[in-house]
Structures are given as structure tokens and as C-alpha cells.
Length: 601
Image (tube, rainbow, N blue to C red; front, top):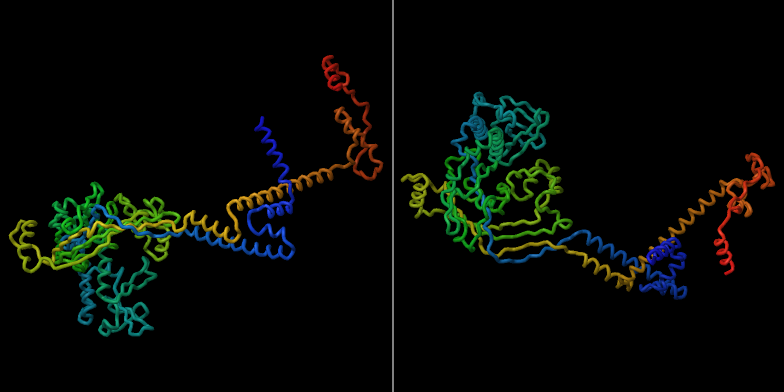
């Protein structure tokens, strides 16, 4: 019952409203608030009242401006970066190695026969244009050439450049091709470019090169890629360098290893690549101590004598250090080790920990990145590279990638310090190559040479690692402290003052609602009165209508002015009203007596 009464009082309070006018409520607030300034406005004389009103308004504006600045700073989600050092035994990184030549020339010679002949003819035209004959290309397959040819651009007249096709017998003059003696175009006056046209040949563009070497290398790589793309990948693996032939010796710390400890993957630019300590099927190998004695030592045979002559212009191996279970993007992030040298790589570890949304646009596993992972079949951890490779075909797509792709929230980077020395030395060259040849080929003859071997030493320089961690530069405590500090400094207020102000706002709103409800109710009553045709009923008529439900008022004699209701029709005078049966109803004696007693009391 008490709860019901309390709820009824609350309902009555809500229906009644605060019980103040706007002016009374504002005066009460200024007289009772704990904020400095409003009290002086209502208690001082006219001049001081105006002065205090202006001062209070100015300081309140400053508080609002400062609050806006602090809230905007907080919502910018800025981060601060902290650097800490740690020391512990760490897992050795995964190491990926690739030969600089993706395929063995002895196995792909038949696929590149027509392309090699065309390449030799191109070099002949570039090196000795006057001595080369046009009919020398009659027996060659020019279908590849006609699709993407190399041209000479004569820029001796920069306002009217002349484009010359290397194999055109009679070039015609225009901005795209023009007649002229080829012998007059030398390396200083002409540049080699690649003409790239659409499928229907309606629009073409030229890719210029500063050197003919770059031009013919890029052109050959483009044509070779087109040829190899038509060969199944399982056959391409057989055309490359096997792990058994590439890896001559392996030692991790004090434990021997072999090519069987490497995982094979196929990379389009480098053919067969091999990953050590990838951690896909086995546990990652830890490093016992820093130093070269506890790292990975490899001796590799790159087989330089079997390189594709026009495809691989670099001799050596491409290598990369990366995390376990992460895909090696060796073309973008790898480094080269040259043949005939011992390359030592000291490793330092940096661990990056990003804050995440909304502070940093990073992802934990890539599930919230709306771009397909091109290397998802390898079941590797997330990396931004395959997203970027999928969208880097044009500048607009690269901008799209920057907006859509995200960095990994947790990342490990390996900083490398690289040093090199000749290996083997001239004094030890004979016996080292004899031993290695015997181990690989079971031959007493020397089958290896300095130009075909690479030695690698990969190790931790120290077990110290750096952790670069992001944290919120402005947290909620910082925001509340600054908001309260500004409010207290300029207005002398606190959180209770804000609660008082919120209470007054609520009362203002509730008074407004009560007034609007009353206004709407008054409008409805006036509209109802306007719809009623005659004057209001008398008291006698109301009493008779309450006691006699069959009573109908005599509207014909109530209005003395008949013209006031021109549309009203004369109603018939009602007959004798039915009796009031309640007056004839018998009641028990005890009820009558109780009523009498009650009246007596």
C-alpha cells in the first residue's frame, strides 16, 4: 500500500509540474547555486548586476570553448609511443632463401627458344643498326613482338619526337612512327621504349627507359612471364632449382641440418624458395645464445652456369627474415647476398604493439579487411602485403588500398646488420671446393667454383629486444581532469554544480511540457464549444438528465431568438417522462436504519 501511495504521489507530481514559473525558477537557481557569479547578478545593484552578468557570461563562454577544445582533442584518438627494453631467450626467425634465377636454363631452353632469337635480333638492331639486315627477321616468330614491341624514340627535336620501330622496313612519319635513317639515331639522341597498346590497338602508350639495358631486361621479363604463365605450377617446380642441389651444407647452432629441414614454396619471381624454421607444422626453434656460433650457417650452390642469360642479371641469393607462420614477401622485403662471399647477418628484434581501433587502424587477424587474401591457402598470419598486391594495379586502386587495408596490431620486425667477406680465400679455395664437390657429386674432380657458391651466417647479435607500444595519449581521466579544472578555475564550480544545472534544465523542460499540454487541452475545449449549437444546459436539466435517462431537453423553448439557429428544425414536445423507478424500489429495514443512524451521527 505504501508503494502504491508513493507512486500516486509521483504521478500527481508529474501531472502538476515543478510549480514554478520560468522567472521564479531562474531566480531560485541563481540564489542557491554553488557556482560563483549568478548570486551577484540578482543581489547587486543595477550597475554591478550588469557587470557581473557580463563577467559571468564571458567566463562561461571561455569554459565552453575550452571544453570544446579538450573534447575535440580526446575524440582525435591520438596515441603516444613508449619504448621499452627486454631480455630473454627468443625463437629464431624464419629464414627464406631463393636463387636469383627462377629456372635452370637447361630445362627451359625449349620454352624460350623463339624469345631468345628475338632478343638477339633486338640487341643486334640496338648495337649495330646499320649492319643488321631487315630480312634477318624473316624466319623469326614476330607474334610476340607485334603485340608489345620495343621502339626507338628520336628526341633530338623535343617538340616533334620521332618513334621508330626496330623491325619496321619502311616506317611512316607521325608522332608514333616516322621515316628516317636509323644510322643517324645514336644512344645520345634516341631512347629505347616499350609500346603498350590495348587489346584492339586503338590506344597506345610508351614506357620510357633511361638505358637500353633496362628496356630489354624489362621487355624480356614481361615476355618470359607470359610464356611461363601458360605452364602448370607443378611443372614449373621441376624446372627450377631443387633444395637438394641448392643447399650444400646446413648447421644450426651445434646441430647439423639439411635440405629436409626446409619447406618449399613457389614464388613467381624467384621460382623455388625454401623456408627454414617456418613453424607451420613444427615448433619454432629457439636460439640458445647470441653470436655466430649459435645461429644458422648455410653453404649454397646457386649454379650460376645454368642461369637464364636474359632473365637473371643478378648472381646470388635473395633472403628474408620474418616471423613464424607469416608469408615471405621476398621481392619487396628481401635482401641479396652475392656469390663468392661469406655474408654475416646480425639480427636485432623490434616488437610493435598497436593500440587498435579507434586509435590505430589495425587488425588482429585480417577478418575485418574487405580484401581477399591472395595467400590465404598457406594458412599464414595476416599481413598487409597481399592486400596491397591485390590493389596496386593503378594509382586509384593504391589509394583505395591505403583506405581499406590495415596494419597488423602485433608485428615483429628484424633489423639486420650485414657484413661481407670473400669466401673461400685463395689459400683455402682448392681444398674447400674439393670437399664440397666430393660431398655433392661423389667426384674427385672439382665441380664447384667461387662464382657459384654463397655462404650465409645468420645470428642474434644480442638477446635484448625492443618493444614499441602505443597507448592512448588522452584517456577519459585526462578529459575529466581538464574539464573539471577549467570549470573550477573560471567559474568556481564542481560536479555538484553541473548536477544543479541539469536539474534546472529538467525543470525548464517539464514546465514547458506542462504548458504545452495545457495549451493543447484548452484548444480542444474551445473547439468542442464551437461545435455545440445552443447555450449550455441549466442546472435543473443536468439534474433531471442524471436521474432520468429517458429525459430529453426541450430545445424548442430554450432560445427566445429563433433567428440565432436558422438551420435548427422544431422538435416535437416530449410526452410524459417515464417514472423514476428507483424511488419506488423497496429497501430492507436494516439498511434504512443504518442510513438514519449515519445521518444522525
